[in-house]
Image 1 (tube, one colour):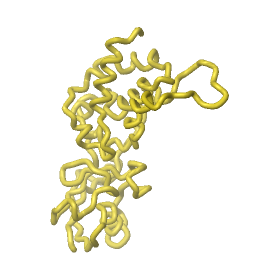
Image 2: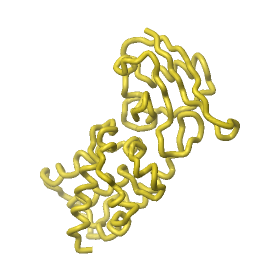
Image 3: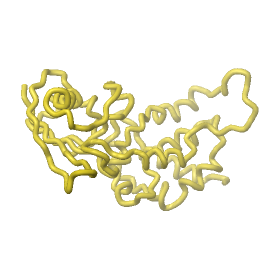
Image 4: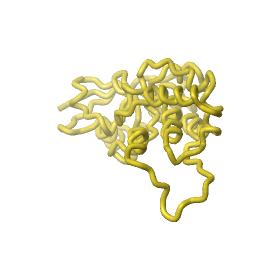
Length: 233
């Protein structure tokens, strides 16, 4: 089977403007888009740049835009796209470093800003801090975030407002604020309770539709809004 990859190429250090370069790939059933990219890099053009690591949809490294939608290249199979031509671009909303590689530092900085760890100054118990199964269920889904950045990259508010915390970081804030063992609300609420935080979200569900792990950042953000409205801080 044969497919054409039309890949966004741009090196800010040497290129005046981006271009699209076509490569024809002979692929086998079961190949992912990442397999196709590897075939190009290893056998046709070693200058092509993109991120990859686990090949198991766990690390989030290979997030990219494929035929207009954000995907993990290692997760989506070529034949499932049902297209003779695949247009491969970097995920939007981030500065391009080279070709399909974008600068993820703004995402990580915003994640760090929301205090992404458990805050509890009480003396630790001998073993672990116990949590009921019912309480764990409240945060179970949000723990599955792999920080690929696809949700934030799919969000128009993230594109428009460079200071917007974004759905990835807000979902992580929900993960800890909804955790019964955490006592860090007083630190996180001032960070998210403003026009660049919770209230920048317009609930359009792009983040939910794009998430490769079937998470729902929009629902987490809605719960955070309730927490902030009724908070004692």
